Amino acid sequence: MGGTSKTDQKAALDIASWLFNVVTSVGIILVNKALMATYGFSFATTLTGLHFGTTTLLTTFLTWLGYIQPSQLPWPDLLKFVLFANFSIVGMNVSLMWNSVGFYQIAKLSMIPVSCLLEVVLDKVRYSRDTKLSILLVLAGVAVCTVTDVSVNLNGFLAAAIAVWSTALQQYYVHHLQRKYSLGSFNLLAHTAPVQAASLLLVGPFLDYWLTNQRVDAFNFSFVSLFFLILSCSIAVGTNLSQFICIGRFTAVSFQVLGHMKTILVLVLGFTFFGKEGLNMQVVLGMLIAILGMIWYGNASSKPGGKERRSLSIPITKAHKLSSLSETAESDEKV
Image 1 (cartoon, rainbow, N blue to C red):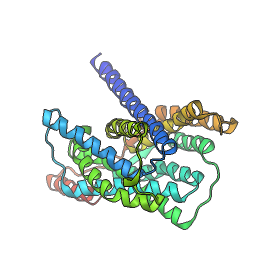
Image 2: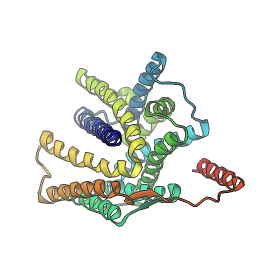
Image 3: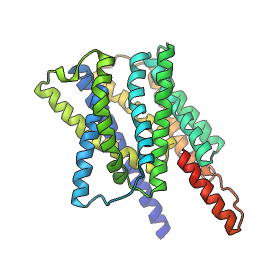
């Protein structure tokens, strides 16, 4: 009986974590769409720096109150994570600027196979045939409803490649660092947010000027645009935290697969709030295929053997055990 209630409790927490991520992610996309498209605040990198600045204020306040306990994250691992995370943000912004919407969507879809590859190579994860097929069905569904014109140039391709690999590595590292150093989501955020805020606020205005030919310090705020900026920063705290919570609970691949549910929700809400332009049978069909794929993935990956770590046979002598442990530690350091 206790085991069943524990399973039910875990399932309830998983659902709550995922809903928290979906609500904050969809919310911030809609708020940012209004802020950028309607009010002309097109400084994406600087905005992300402000998001992490707000997150830093919250984690500092919670640490001061004693809700976040002191923890350790070595500087080499912290800097590696921040490097991947910042390249992911900058790469995505540049990729969206230089590529067609169609190729940008294909690049985003390719994050799932890249995340799978990282799990297979670095964590020795094995996927069942059903799990692989369900991932392909999700990719096919999202591709049908989001990929339109596909044109690419060399610069755009390089930007997309950097964005995809750095995003996949950053998401893998969230799970890896939480496991390696026994860090909670708030702990990891308290370590990473200040460094990301400082680096993005330093680089952001210059990068945004290069991409938009507009200066962020010359932007003329109205009361409404300032309200949307504050709202965006407030929601971003939840988005940043929920990402760490979800990847900590689900792994990067599951986070990516379920993440496409947000793509579908954003499309639906976009059609609801911003008009039906672009809504056709192809989009509806793609949504249905993607949703079926997500349901299949949920069932396939949770079954025994659906997605599991390969157990490596370790010799029983103490010397061999110590040798294997030290090799594992070394390979973790190199990731």
